[in-house]
Image (cartoon, rainbow, N blue to C red; front, top):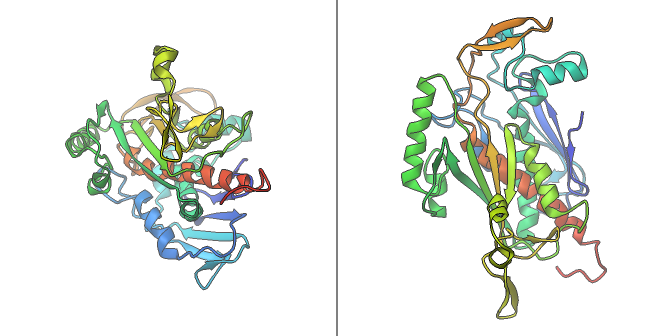
Length: 358
């Protein structure tokens, strides 16, 4: 079961949704990086459950503990191990699901592949696993900061309601993390309405990386776009990824889609950045822009058709504590996967040529 991501800055996550603990081991982190558990916790708090009325009420504090690889708040170069303990598990809500497959979930595919499954919250397929990604990315962000780069994300759309204005300062000022305060309130209202209907909504998360050095990524299989795509599609509930203007470019001509080169002082710039910060699989120095499609939460309290492990038809209603929309919490996970991808590529690039500039 693949649980490792990255080549040099490599993370391995472990643990299950209803197990005793979750964790991540980070290998390849350079020594000498200042790091406190509070910096890690600040990112985890943006991902955690129970943070607002539009998220699941499961009450997990997600407190991180550093077990190794950091001494006196400085990374040592040794593997960094982080852990959190599940504290608000209620597996009884899943007792009626032991022998049936939840629509929209990985229950059936896990059962066919492995011959058994953990029905309590989905086990490894649960979004609880993303705790380790966000925790590890707090360290990846420090590496990117060394390179002068930064990653941030926001909710672009929920339930067909799209942002129309952009003010970065507004992102963390509302519970759906939308940079348009007017659209944000409409999104909140839509989520609360769908929650009353015992249904769910999907949406689109956008992440941007600014200040990224030119030259990250490889021109063939390890294109930066390909690695970002893998990273994003590994996140639970993601069903699509586009970079730059993405699918919109398919409806244009080359004369309008190409980014013209020009000089801004001694810096090479690219027109409108339609390509989203990449050309030929390599970063251009412009902002990397990634949008991720998040499907509606699969667990809903409505009766649905399914089958059981004897392949007989059944009716199912999924009870428990679930997000009416996972989009607001997914922002931190999308950010994390972009940060992890770019930090790994940055460290790889330092071996690409002997005179690689800092």
